[in-house]
Image (tube, rainbow, N blue to C red; front, side, top):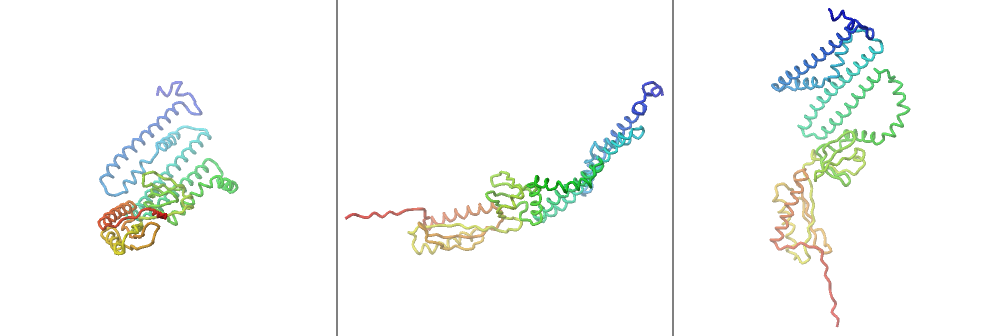
Amino acid sequence: MNLLNNSFTNYMLLDNYVWEWILAILITLTIYVFLVFLKKVAEKKLKTFAEKTSSNLDDYLLEMLSSISRIFIFLSAINIGSNIITLNENVNNGLGHAFLLILFWQTTKWIVLIANIIFTKYKKIKETNNDMHGVTAINGLTAISKFIIWLIFLMLAMDNLGVDITALVAGLGIGGLAIALAAQSILGDLFASLTIMIDKPIAIGDYVVVDNFMGNVKAIGIKSTKLESLTGEEIIISNSDLLNSRLRNYHQSRMKKRRSTMKIGVIYETNFNELKKIQGILREIVKSNPKTEYIRAIFTNFGDFSLDFELTYNVLSPDYETLTEINHEIRLKIFETFEKEGLRFAYPTRTVHLAKED
């Protein structure tokens, strides 16, 4: 009581006694410390419980609990502690607006987290079924959903701050053209990402050739698509450029095999019987490999310096690395067999005939 009766605590500060300010601060700090402590204890208990169960529900609850911001806790404590003192209208309104903003922000974080959990669940189902086009679509929907949710939060926050949303939207109708022109490339990439999501020309995991670039699709974002080349570099292509380019897709999600064609030339000195054997030799080489499917081997042309054959076969795998490895094996086997059979490969030659002078 002596503390409350001395001249300092009875001094008025901003329409409140000093002791009232001290009490409000103590209550605020106590509530803040208690809520932070309670959050940590709850997280620890829930984490221990989640590790013992196979259900994902407790994991989701732990994620939502962990996402609670300390700023939200602090402003909540201030909102409670300030009730015992009298604040002027401006300060009171300011605290109210600040608390509503942080409440909107925290709620938006929870909604985004829930949406992400739902989309992740369906994404895992698509990955289990090897539906990479479905994975691509879900990635696009996730990004767009997050954008819309945060846009709604921004509009609510601006409305809470006293901004006339109706007038703002009407003003955007006038300034929208200028904004669209300034952000033409960004909007183009955004609509291109929607096209990729709906039309599904590519999916994550596909091997694609885009003009002079080639590689496996690693990620498809709102603005750009990332490829990983065969040599390991990351290639980033804007989505609008991707759709405007000549695109070849060796999609592993739908391809079961790849076709390979190679040309083989032998010298003109090859006799007729040897020439007839070449087709059978090439056929047996391809059929002897369990990872290939023979299509044809034909005598195609009388070249400038060679008798040309064309060998065509399928590699029973959509993987590009497997294709190159099988081609390597087939070429080595052709070289080995031709060497045993005495068949000689052609190479550019020129025969010069000299006229003998009388």
